[in-house]
Image (cartoon, rainbow, N blue to C red; front, side, top):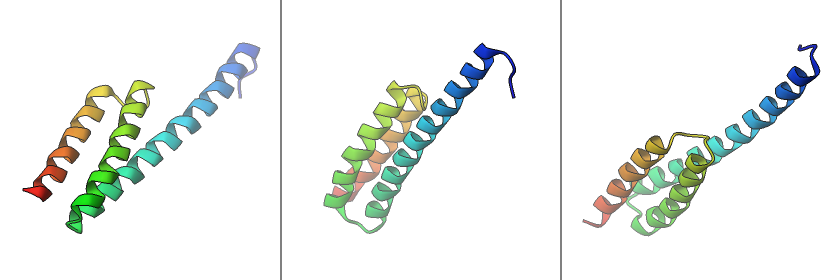
Length: 88
C-alpha cells in the first residue's frame, strides 16, 4: 500500500478505472457473443439487431480508450462480413 497521499489517490483512481474498463469490456464481449450465436443459428434478423448493439459498444469502448481503435474496427469489420454472408 502506498504511503504518499498522491500515490494513494492514484491507486484509488486506478481501481475505479480498472473496474469501469472491465465492465465495458464484459458488456462488449457479451454483445459480440450474441451476434455470433445468432450467426450460428442462421438468424439474419437477430444477427443484424445484435450487430448494431455490438458495434455501438465497441465504438464506445474504443473512443474511451478501453480497447484500441484499430482492434474495434477490425472486430466490427469481421462481424459485419459474417452477418452479410447470412443474407447472401
